[in-house]
Length: 114
Image 1 (cartoon, helix red, strand yellow):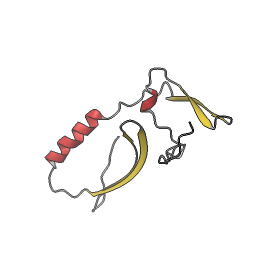
Image 2 (spheres, helix red, strand yellow):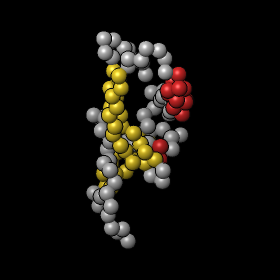
Image 3 (tube, helix red, strand yellow):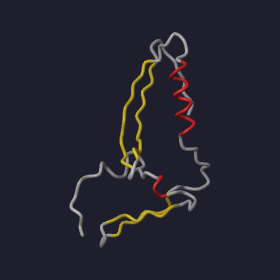
């Protein structure tokens, strides 16, 4: 991602959709706003940013799509999502709509159907 800074009072405005994962991944949305008016480089945070970038997922090559087809099974009341790339780990994906919004909202408690 490239960033261009301009103006007398530049600031970073970031709207992000994140996957917070442990046993399951929960989509979350966040908004960050940070003024970019440091007189000199912020070396400690620069190191933190480089470390975070090193752990970020690699960019896709664009030759394959992560998600192939999506079908709704009315009888089972569930979505069937087929992977477009067999090399992907299904638990590493978070589906989103064309607008970028997560496909699934925050999980809600429900009775176990068994």
